[in-house]
Image (tube, rainbow, N blue to C red):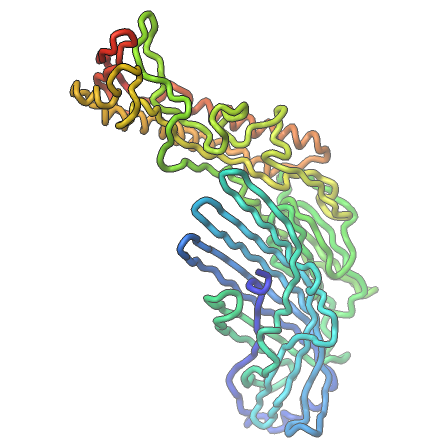
Length: 538
């Protein structure tokens, strides 16, 4: 999947521009022994595909920001001996989500990568008379690529009727220039005046982020290196940074300019009113630093050349995980495993259940089967059953040592059980009597309307539960909290889940509103086997 996520080419092109108005242009470039450049490229792709038994949806994105240096090279063996060659470093940010939906199972894979890559740049086929050049960005074959280690965080969540399983792994990155090949891009224009070379392009490629292709937006700047061309001291905090809650995001001041001797990062809440706990620690030193983000924060980068300082701030916009509690009502119905025969017993009222709305994930009658939110708690807690907790380890970071909910797998799945004795073809409620359905038909009673009302009544339980859960879903609430103390977090999370369980259960308790059935339905006498009609309302 990592290759699927981040395959990328970098070919540069633009129109040819003549230098008729600048006949001495070649002299400008030949006097420069060294150049420095920056590049930026990004792309995204999304789509959906349906096979015979599976629907696949995906979305992927990549952003590359790099800096490089070039020196003049003459190769007399070439027909055009002058070129500029050098190496660079880029920060790569990738993200992707893939959802595979099968009839009985859903697998959600998410990928997040933030790593450094090295590359080579070659400016060749320089034609001063025509005012053009060709640029190639290729893989650095002479260095060990940092991304070859574990660079992309892969989380896979598989959910079916038996439960939910989450796995984590770290996958290797992929060298983004690889798929562009070592070939040169098309001709690009040199500037008519001055020495700063700016370029930009938009390109389509049908074999990059996905089989449906993607559009790349690319820009670059190349300028001479020397005292007279020295860039001013300027802090650039980078970004955009948009991690999910709990993820590690790397802040990178790569694009900062000047003769920088030190980088320092400080953190503060993005919103002064935000409720989540925050540690105003010492911050972090370094051009590229990792930060574990539990809520949106403001990061300020200060760079120094030993004499002067400059600062720049960026908002790390943290995206909450989708911890809404999923609700599923299974289509169709099942026979009630403990169906009670509908019959009139002398001296007693008629008491039986035409149907029942139950958890679809537990065996009927098991000790933990009576609940709405699944699974049921153990010892009053859903810890390790419906959620797990994790402590942040991020020295100098804004949330160091805080506890938060790492995974949340509580869900609701309901199904309808129907009393087998009231169905067409069902067994007789009393061994020596006629079947229920056949007898009511013979008496002219609306037994089909009665059955439909039983089904609507049981479905109404699910609808009321779903509405109540939507109004009091514990998932988003526990996603927004963090505590210094693990037991305090556990207590708070369990209380929120239990409150939702109680509210959802209350909302669907009998008696429910009428579903519109009213009329006579007959039941057999336990002593005489004769059917007697009574007025029913559901």
